[in-house]
Image 1: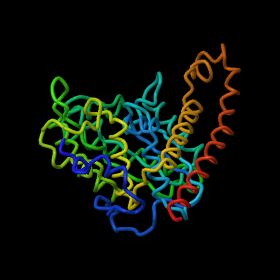
Image 2: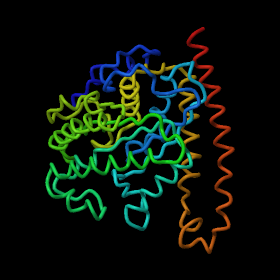
Image 3: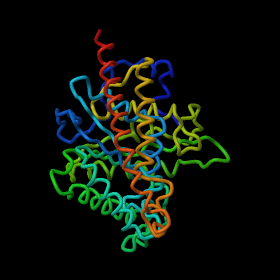
Image 4: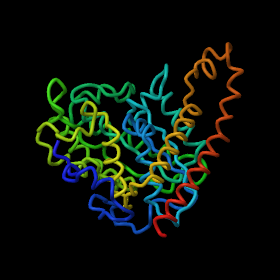
Length: 342
């Protein structure tokens, strides 16, 4: 894949300093000068596998945390990604219909009460041409009925999800950010040639640009920023992904950089303290994952809770441990800024 980032060497990427990048790919429809993140914000990252797997390397969260700048304090993030998810929240439903998945997302949003929600959906449509990509009863057949109808169903489901997120009692999120998925990568046979998928992703991007404006959301085009418009089917020499779809750690570092630029933020420096901050974020994410999605949930909360449901009282015990980690992250963040200014 001829990604724009391939023009930069790895050392160049690693040596970027604070606020050193021009936000070429940002499109806020009116160019709001108000920064996305403010002191005390709670930020939720919601999407499919791209978001869920980001918790394992911490680059996206580190980029946002540092990019917000030293004047912004006490940011807290929750990765609510779920591999295989759609705008109807199919994957979040363990045993029932997509409604169960939507209720699950609504519950965590209601509990967390984020000020900012970053949403990343669209790959489910680009990868499923001519096939149903949701089990939602009112949308499944339409999602397989043809390209135009599939995109229309996707946008309807997306709008409904945003409506539900904003409907939460209280103030609701101050900001919604619609993030276009990055392009798929061609790694050569026997892996798929993603030329047609990227052509469809380009159309999804175009649809999401107007969709974001209509829904009063910020818009970040990772597809364009990562070279999707220049994709011609050539086998990538960079290897940003394991299999054309799932990003490597190096790929996530590149994604994080472009996300920061798209939100008018700079990139974080490659120094030991920044890497220590990122590793602290990874550990916090690990703890939260077990708090939110315990491996034995069937026994704790669902139809086998009569066997081990008494152990559910232990799950909230993660909370003070997570809070301690967040305090440590804030201390590292402050030290990083102090060192960069001194």
